[in-house]
Image 1 (cartoon, rainbow, N blue to C red):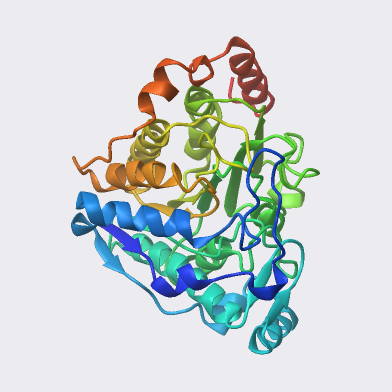
Image 2 (cartoon, helix red, strand yellow):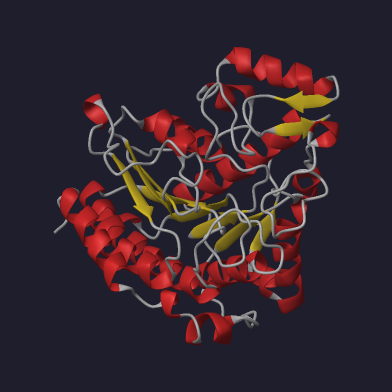
Length: 368
């Protein structure tokens, strides 16, 4: 496989600056010293792990130009860009909810969006078979004029609009398997039928008031927004069954020109901001399922754009498993917790009530 990999050292330098106070995410987890669970280490350690195993040598590695004003304003109004840029130039601050940034935050966010956009364009136009963008800051919570949940620009939506405007795409599918609901992407496309949005997330985690199964789009977009809220404690078997019974049937019916994944890795165990149990092998299996689906529907065009994931110890193994699968590589990073996770944890296998719930949701969408 020709797999593009997009990263840039400057994206690791994004920080909350002096505006990010120490954040206590749990009474049993040490507070994060820089104030943001979204910190560079999970991303940097993923890239470093690929350096050590040699996987990076099998990829087409590059950065990209920052997203242009034209690209950004297809999603975000000029008034928001102006406010963000002025605050960034003046030392940083916070816009929206839980989105602090330091001086230069605007430029780093535009670079993150630019990497996602270039990955999407390069796969859409056939430069690569598939791609992974290690974008930071993330994007899926960002609404057009309201940054939210560590997200300052909606990276995937910016890339989606670029291929719809200039690169021949007519129908784009966005699957969000970040453990938190992709409320920003949902809001952007809620009343449109040319972009299918699917979000698999822990129910009522973040944001706590969005992501219900009954939220299915409006106007011509009705039926083109699918939410799959799963209960805490689901392992990879529940996610695989969700793909089999809901996601793949929805993608098949929609017949997209490209599939884009909001690739959050916070459904993995040990994440301080969630309560799911998807192992690295589970993420690899889901990637394989999507690759087969993309091969059937859209000439294999599949792009992963990094979103959340806050376990510095485990996120790198999940990301490595995904990227190795994308590249068709035989290079693996041995998961030190695989035995504990996949042998001793029954929740990783399917629980009857999980299967019943997924079946009920599938039937409500008309897939069973």
